[in-house]
Amino acid sequence: MQRRSLVVAIDGPSGSGKSTVARGVATKLGLRYLDTGAMYRALTWLALDRGIALDAPTELEALAAGALLEVVSDPQAPAIRADGVDVTDAVRGAEVTAAVSAVSAVAGVRTAMVARQRELIGEGGIVVEGRDIGTTVAPDAAVKVFLVADPAARAKRRALQDGGGAATAAAAVAATEADLARRDAADSTRVTSPLTQAEGAVVIDSTDLDADAVIAKVLQLAEAAS
Image (cartoon, rainbow, N blue to C red; front, side, top):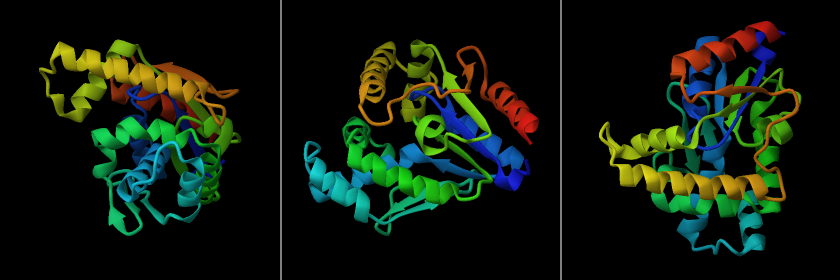
């Protein structure tokens, strides 16, 4: 399989290292990069900006069907715009983070977004990260990885990512771990495209591995599939 048609699917819960690993693999292989989670976050940002209630599925489905989402697939400078507004940084805010699981659980939202994601994947040549890539979005991906990590390790990473600094307080990590547990439960129990290991996916536990080590493992899988 030539690299221009290669699809690498990386799934896993929040804080497992998907973004760092996916971007690293895409950079090493010279492939495009797609963060499907950012797409759901951008849609959530739009819903909040427009005052759409999180318990209004019909309105959320209409938003998903009509919203203009523009994705920059450069792994070294990924970005996303929602209806012309650059929301790359805004979608990582606390308000969006608290609401995104509710928006992404709406069946019609996922149907619309999966269709968009498949269009972006196109003929391949891309590393895609999310929670349902190997199971729903790209089940025929040549490389499927399910990235996991110990909850405490995931919480510390996410707290640091959110600006906690090297001396992130234990209370902040504990709060982050509780939030991740909430999101895990929501993502794993939703009816449509729940977070689950895809058939044929290789499980990589990143708890005791740095990003470079995990990237190397995924590159080995990509090389074997090429």
